[in-house]
Every structure is written in C-alpha cells, then in structure tokens.
Amino acid sequence: MISNVTEISKDQLLSEAQKMSGQGYRFVTASCVDLGEDKLNVIYHFDKNTELTNFRIAVKRGEEVPSISATYLCAVLVENEMKELFGLNVTNIAIDYGGHFLLTPEALKNPQSKITIVQKGDN
Amino acid sequence: MNNKTTIPFGPQHPVLPEPLHLKLVMEDEKVVEATPAIGYVHRGLEKLAEVKDFNQNVFLVERICGICSVMHAQCYVQGIEAMMNIEIPERAKYLRVIWAELHRIHSHMLWLGLLADAFGFESLFMQCWRDREKIMDIMEETAGARVVISINAVGGTRRDLTSEQMAKIVRVVDEIAADMKVLEGALLNDYTVKHRLVGIGTLTKEEAYALGAVGPMARASGVAQDLRTMGYAAYKDLDFQMVVEKDGDSWARTAVRFKEVLECIRLIKAAISKIPAGAEYCVPVKGNPTGEVISRVEQPRGEVLYYIKGNGTKNLDRLRVRTPTFANIPTLLKMIPGSHLADVPVLLLTIDPCISCTER
Amino acid sequence: MFDFLGNVLKNVVSKPATRMYPAEKRQPMKNTRGALGEIDINTCIFCGLCARRCPSNAISVSKTDRSWELNRLKCVICNVCVEVCPVKCLHMDEAHLAGLFTREKVRRIGPAKPAPAKKAE
Image (cartoon, each protein chain N blue to C red):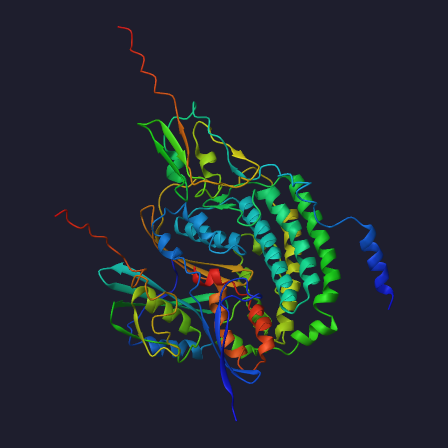
C-alpha cells in the first residue's frame, strides 16, 4: 500500500519535476512496471525529510517520455537503464549511452519486459 | 597548448572491489572529464525474482551484494510484511537490529581497510580486517555462515540468540571499540594520511543534495538524512544518534564511517540490554502478497529502496531495487573533474562503490 | 629513532597472529551450515517438500521412482530443506565440503513402497 501516489500525464512530468525541485525535494529513483500488451507504468519517487511523494505515468512502449535530467542530473542513470531494459523511449537525456549502458550488443532486446515464449509447430 | 589524452580507468583495477569503467579525459595530470560505464556484472536479478516464489526471493535478494546482504533481506521482508499485514514479534525486531548493526560494522571496517590499501598503507589494511574477523566469527557462531547469513525470513528471523551468545557479542564489540581507539590515530590523525584525504573531492551541501547523494556521502557534506530516524524495526526505542560532518571532503567521509562504527557498537549494546524476553521470534505466514509497497532501509552505503508489486499469486509481479551506490555514482561526475590522476582511486573509493548492488 | 626497536623485539618473540594451516586446521563452530549431510533414505516419504522450497532448485524428488537427487553445485546451504522436512530425514553437516571433482549429482533410491495391508474381511 503505497501512500501518496498521484497519477499524472506525461506532459505534466517536466513541470511537476520543476515544482519538486523548487520545494526542495530530492530525486530518489524511478520504477518501471510492465503491465503486458506494451503498456508501461513509470513511477517517479521524490523524498524530503524521509517523506516520499510519488508520481505515476502510464505510457505505451514507443511513446516519447521527456527526460527530467535537465532539472535532476542524477536521473540520467535510471533513465538510461529503463530505456535499455524496458524499451521506454526517453528523449533528451543529458548523458545518453545510446543503448549500451548495461547490455552487450548480442543481448536480447528489452529483457525485462513481459516475454512470452511461443512454441514452434511440429511441421 | 592543451594535450588531451583519454585514459581508460578500470574495469580491472587493484583498488576496485568490483569492475567499474571510467573514461577519463586528461590534460597533462589533471582530469577534465569523467564518464562512468557499468554493465560488467549485470545478472538480471529483478527478472529472476518474478520467476521464484516470494519466500525463495529472500535468498535471492540477499545475494545481490555480499557486504550489505542482511539489510537487503531485511528491506524485502519488511515490504512483504507490510503488504500482507503481518505483525512480527517484538523480539524479532530487536534481533534484526542486532544482526543489521553487526553487518554495518563489518562493512565499514572492510571499507576502512580498503581505503588504507588504496593509498598504499597495507599494514593498516591488515589491522582493520583483523578486527573484522572477530565480527565474522560471531556471525558464524550465531547465524551459521560468515558473509551471507540468511537470518531474515518473512514473519521474523530464523534463529534466536541465547544469553551466552549475547554476552559474547557484548564482549567482542567492546574489544573492537578499544581497537578502534588505537586505529583512530592512524586513520584520522596521521600526517601523511591527512595529506591524501583533506581537501580532496569536496562536495558542498547543495551539490550533494542536488545530485541525490545518500548515506555517508551526504552526511559528510552536512546533509542530515538517515533512514534509521524513521524508526523501522526497533530503532525507535534505541535513541539513535546520526553522525554528520561539515567539510564534505574525503577526510569527512572517512570520519563519518569511523564514528558510525562506534555508534553501531552503542546500538548493539542498547539492543541487547533492552531485548524483550520471550520465546517467539517468527510467526507463520499464510496467503500471498497483493498490491504494491515501497520499503526503505538504511544500508551501510545509504538508502535502499524496494518497490514490490504482488498480484495475489505466489510469484511477484515486479521487484525493483534501487541501491545506494546507484544514487552515489552521479557524484563522481562532479568530484573527479579537476582532480589529479593519482587522487582518482581514492575518490572512487570514498563513494564506497558496490557495483554488484548497482547492476543487480 | 629507536622506539621501533620495542615493536621489533615484541614481534620477534610473540607467536604469529595467523593460524599455522595446514598443520592446524580451523574447527567448525556448532550449528554452522557447512554442507547438506547424508539423507536417511529409509525414512524419506518422497513428499517433495524439500524440492519445492529449495531456492536454487538443487533437489529433485520422484515419488514413482522412489528417488531423491541433490545437485551439490547448485545448493546454497540455506537449511530450508532441513527445516521443512516432515519426517526429519535431512541434516546439515558442520564441515564445509573440501572440493568437488565431478559434476555428478548425489542420487539415492529408497526401498520399494510396502503393499497396503488388506483389511481382514
């Protein structure tokens, strides 16, 4: 039971991040959940004096999500990771590793998304 | 005329306990730019956690890192217990605190030894680790293993502590406190050591907060945040005092970790004296976790955040782990440019890098 | 200048700080989790609880073949199988394994199931 989650749209994301920074909140991290059928939920966690505030956005894989690294430089690592492991299309990251942050070139694409295994037919 | 050369630092380096790659752009002896690159020990543990059931995940999660392993398990079981509304016995909360603080002492002593080794003071490294051996022997006697002790379970702990064991723990931590007084001269007040640490890699309070630094990194710059003040497990009854320094350089980080060891010793003795008598240390668990929860715990390196989502079956929907070194790596982008090449190993070690935690 | 001499003399006459291994081996402590010991296969009822609870899937049990198999290289020595066994046929040894030379699994076959006694008419 997370307390304090606000649902916002991805267009409000940058303005909410600016507001949080102005009020003195620290960026903790962002969590990405794959809900199946190419739907992703991203939750951004902010903290001030050990009180957490969370924002959730719902996007489809491939939709562009703006990066908050202009306000919070520490978000570069987690946005690169979400881009590589889930296929979340984050644009304008301050330091963009271009898909080579964690995975090697031979690895499976988007390994943490919901993978279904289809049996090959006998004939 | 500017001579810029690019030097690869790592991934294998004698000072690093785990592989981390830094691309350093140098102008003669000064570093101008530093870009970290990780990915050498990515194991995909978050994905594996979706395949195992929520009880087996306790063993998976404590193997994310060997040095902070008990607190990973503690954060996970605290999250699952919050999701399933399980109330654990009071004695189990105190037992968890005792083992967590013992683990914190061992982690900080390991770091103090590695720091001494980073600037070549190998005999001090051996002295710190000799004291650390006493803690490892206690873990083996009380919990059954030296490093990954598997003592937390959903519902409480798996073993209890007898009064002889608790008396022995108090004796050993008192010996360690006496040894730390001797080590203080070499680690904090020595003339040559101070030359390598004072004024190197300074982070101001605003920079540390804006970059999202956690744990001793933030506390050494004056940011007073420590999750143990939230009062999870038994910390609310133990009168916990935060250790904060103002200068923000490598010496301040060493001093914070050194004084935290003494604070841990005081917490262990307070927990042992206040532990409620009783035989119950674990309650049975029925049902499966549903919903989502965020659980946070203070590890030796800082704040760890677990986001757990369950869907009513034995397997979890999502387990997301944000470890403290992940939050401390952006501070490298600020600290390393402007320093000399010879200072880069020491600076890298002061963030207490645990790369296997970062990459899971 | 000569105050290190006291230290040198102390080091010369005192005994070494480390153990003289392999002449003197370290004794394991009580209740240490060293390695999974030998199963008492005659008591085992092949319920499969140990296989289901094992976090690393190191045990496989077959009720039809009356067999219990352990892959020592996968076992993380967590002690869950010993704790959940309903008939307590597993135990944990204190000494760690010296080293394995093959990838062979430990396989034990239990006695055949006795035929159920027919109720006297």
